[in-house]
Image (cartoon, rainbow, N blue to C red; front, side):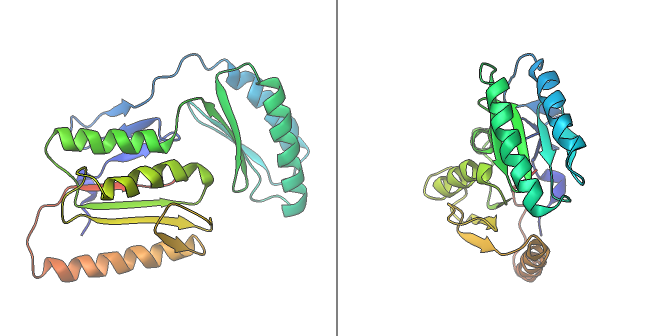
Length: 218
């Protein structure tokens, strides 16, 4: 079974990660400068939040996300397109990336993506002589494609254990660099239950202490 105590965790749009067995501290993967652009961004997003019932702003240390998953689908989609254009205009000279995703519009620092962090994790483990033998990578957004590309490329390289099991899975997004596909997020639980059952069955026959990586969507 997956040992969560030794699993690396990544949050904040893959900007920081946590190594439980490596001094148990959050580590900044990509350094960013001043966040003065957040004041501009939040002011603009607030205008659209006030006029779009069911929408809200998700504020994190290094990103701002306008979420309209609970808004009227058609109106929310129209508002999102307008917001995207508005933000791209007012933030044109700022060191940020503005993008749309599944029911969201996100603004984050340039040069931050999950692919870079996936590379960092694999390189760190390889340097410490602990190449992972199990990688589970799940995402439901176009921003996850960089992560899928890195993970699938690692399969053909020496970054992973020769007996590594790799599950790169996209949810609702096609085409994708991920090998596996799920229709809905609720299917993720069934997939995890299936993996757990298979792991328990294998554990009865083989005693190992695997190195694990779990890269999940934020």
